[in-house]
Amino acid sequence: IGFIWDVLEHAWCKKFNELCAFKAQNGHCNVYQNDEQNKSLGVWVNLQRVLYKKNALSSDRIQQLNSIGFIWDLCGHSWNEKFDQLCAFKAQ
Image 1 (cartoon, rainbow, N blue to C red):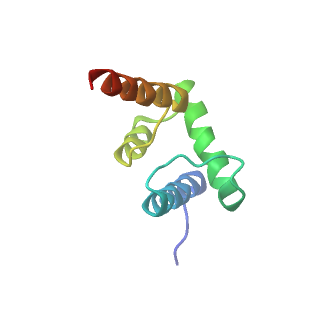
Image 2 (cartoon, one colour):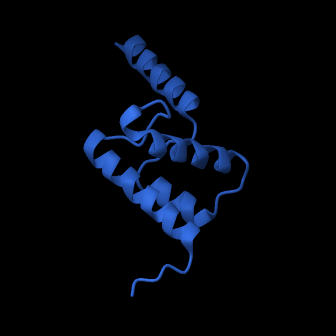
């Protein structure tokens, strides 16, 4: 019959699968809320970051998102990338 017992879990898994498809196509998981083609996925991605910061995301979901290279702190990640580039430039 295909009855869905846990609607919220089903919805989360559906968005996670959408994110996996997005990553396969784009090479990253950074979906922005203002991305017209992926607006609802971008909102969902942002919600996962907010829940993570509030300690309201289950360890299972954190592990699933980590397994696909999800970046929790975009600003911190970007800063670290630029810093690493600066260090590599200085080392030349």
